[in-house]
Length: 458
Image (cartoon, rainbow, N blue to C red):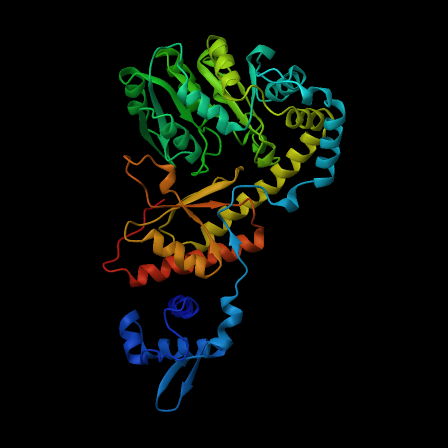
């Protein structure tokens, strides 16, 4: 009975805090509430007594129970925000003094280069430094294969629009996927095909059929710590992708944007397998360093180098020398490795705690994708009976910011009812409180939905 009572207390409490029951409004009678929740009169009496103890309601003799005045509710309404929505690093986690030192050094060393146009492919000294980073991921390019971009978004935009040596024109993307890739494809007016990816992975029969029959130029995939799902492919799956790409002459655009957060030293990228001739390996530095740095790098197969050189030059002539110089100095000094190691430990602990809190607090029927090995994102898949816009609004009113994933699906593809959670700007206390509030609101919507439908099961 205790769990039932606590659930009803939280539901009515949320109705008061969210303004669904206004200040001064009379609550339904004890008998009506017992009928609503299918419980005894004594349970509702206990519920009302607990709400009184929390100074949310008060009783009038022979009149019933009423919500307290608005002034008394203000401490509850002025909730500190819990940010499960942001994907950019919190400024408190950035070593700003080290960044300024490296930027000042870059300005000193590369001052002459600021007054000329640099190599469109990127500074050779930085490319050589990046090769050392790639080698730790079992990717072994030559300097000629490494390109530096003004952010990963530029690389995606160029890849979406340029022709490929296989002579094919259609592009295959996971569903859901990173919204920036979909935006790049839309602006390029490309023909895009979607293939569903779930917490269980991808349908390999469907994938091979697409590779074989649908003139796929390239397949865009986020094999490690997927955005938004948070899941990763297994080693066997990555090897199979590399083999299929080579067999069917389909290129793979491997977005390895969170490679620095990997805790499994044996988790190699797709590029490390026997398909490197068909894999474009893309790395971003926005999640570990600063989005405003606008630096990304890619390893390009030999067959694509002349095309990429032309398209990169046509796009911006060259990437910012100052940004490149900063990254080179930051990496050479060892500060990059030190900072990446700290961020990996921080995010690993947060994602581990998110998984533990989800298992403990969310309704048992919820399907959620939280891997305890690292990354930034996870999703909660909701029952079709849950109106996700209403849920997000209710959470916003209680100080919890989350994102739906509608913009991470093609407009023509069946959208799943997903919430995306990010741990970039949450600590353990915020995760605990935020997941608890999400659980309360989900339970509330289960009580009030008509007719109720079951959640998806794990």
